[in-house]
Image 1 (cartoon, rainbow, N blue to C red):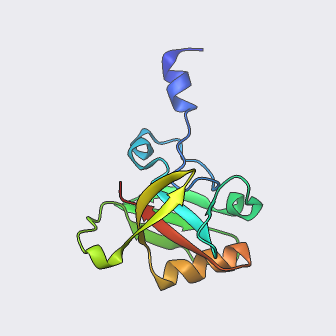
Image 2: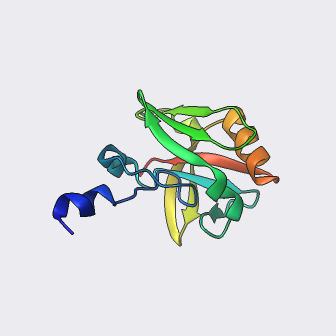
Length: 124
């Protein structure tokens, strides 16, 4: 296998647990967004419903799609400079600063999972 074939097979996961993205441009956004359950626990491959979410980077947006749902688009490079939208959560045993992506994203992710959940962007 050539080096270019190996690079083409590399997947990045902007939302761990959701489908991966082959595009090299996704490297900068690997694990940038996380889905948290009602208790604040980060979900990933342990949540089978996340695997139904396809992920793309399109025109400056993270685009999420799931069966039976409208697409959800989140801007890729928004600077979170308002401390009132930031919170600290524990992800994989590490305290992490995140910004909640809001009610629309909360409702979208909750509908996909069939239970309360929310989408947050890692700001560290």
